Image 1 (spheres, helix red, strand yellow):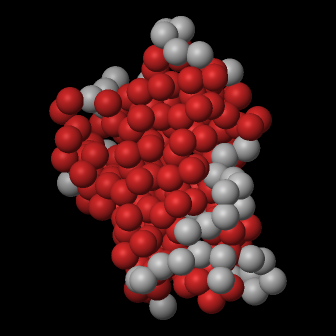
Image 2 (cartoon, rainbow, N blue to C red; image 1 turned 180 degrees about the horizontal axis):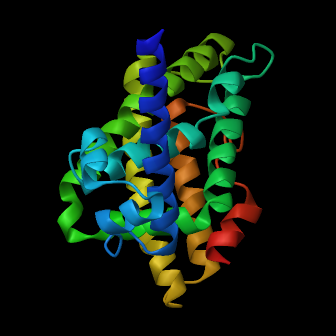
Length: 227
């Protein structure tokens, strides 16, 4: 019983560090946030911090895992819905992710700054690996269903899922560049809209899906970020 309580206490305390880090990311940004800021926020000791995390970057990686869990929280019930066609599942999953990002705009913008930093190449690679690990199994199940329905074509659902995640990674990098350019008024909303349309076209072609059968982002969300 004591061991169970110790594990629960450990989990709660670790969560407290991640919650505080997430708040500081939104208010100060990653570069400006220090471990001391975190300790002051929680009234914790440096030893307590290093009991859970090896470094500031290790904490950030844990926060990203936490954020990924939140962004994909609705994916499992959507994928498990036997009455929902595969194309609609893709639409729902990515629309939910888009809405979550918009609701957590300040946090997402903070993570963008981390992503762009030249010092964070290793961090970017770890995030890329996490994205692959988390999304490939989800997409594989949807692709398998789409093939069974006759709405998608694929020789290997898993390999196709990997290709799609690689497309998503490239899309995210370009979308970030466009967002920065849009803030500087170097591109228009129509430029962003055209890019997103080309991305969706490539997504559908990889799946062999009918044009217009999948929607990966709502227009309202696109306008929220690029309007």
